[in-house]
Length: 71
Image (tube, rainbow, N blue to C red):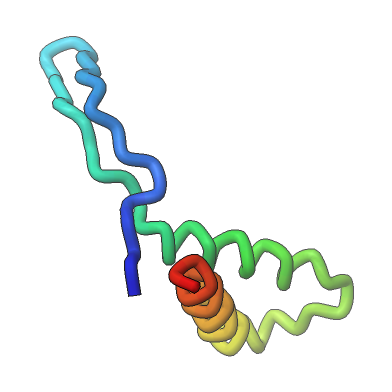
């Protein structure tokens, strides 16, 4: 499964004495899982005791989305 960075940046950022030469960004899988989790939390009947199950389901959705990209 191809899981590239979602938002890589090669831009240099300077803040006072701190310099960042860029970052690889979060993984596409994590980004897709976050979006799926967000949709689960919109449900008005959401049970807070099931967040661990929702998180696992969000990654299953993300994995399916990554697989679909390869087809």
